Every structure is written in C-alpha cells, then in structure tokens.
Image: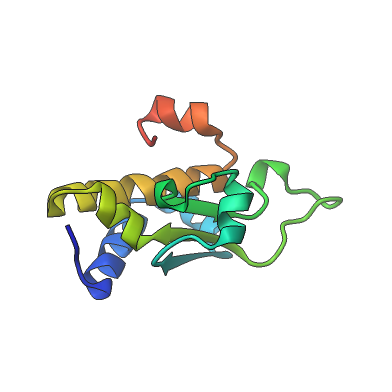
Length: 124
C-alpha cells in the first residue's frame, strides 16, 4: 500500500497531536523527520542488518540520561521511514495505525523507555 508524502506527513502530524499536552514541553527540541529509507548509518545505530525492517529511529540522548555532565546532543530527532512502513502495511488503515505506533514508540525512547517498556504499552 502506498500513499503520497503529503498524506504520510499528515499521519505523522496526527500521531504527534495525540501526545498529551503535559508532555509537549519535553518535545520542543525534538525534530521529527520523514525519510524514505534508513541510511547505512541509521541501521548501524539501530544494530539492524536489513534496512527494510527499520520503521523508525530515535537519534539522541533519552531525557532520563541527560544531565549537566551528559547533556543532550543536537539535534534530538526521530526518523520515520515511509517506504518501510508502506511495505509492511496492506491497507490505508494499517498505515495509519503503524505510523501512530512508530511515532509514539520513538517518542517513548526519547522519554527513556526501552523495548520491553514499549511492548508492555502496546507500542512494539
């Protein structure tokens, strides 16, 4: 299933709109980017051999690890990989759900949640 970049961007915006207001101040310095596919560097960072399985990636230092001695590094960002999400989805509804899950999953990493925490919350 494929959609236009504009439609995909709108789905990402909708997912970001679901973040509760009290968490928004912690996202002010976090950029969300849409890329077609992960780069070789992204795959290396995520420790993934096959780039087609990476749907999103948080680049940065989780809030729980930031301190005066170890401040966050610019830019704090999330990459969402459109072609990979489209590849694993068969319907528009699946794309909508997967974009939401991926965006919230990567935001969870920004807040210091690990894969087990995110799976428990249903964002795996």
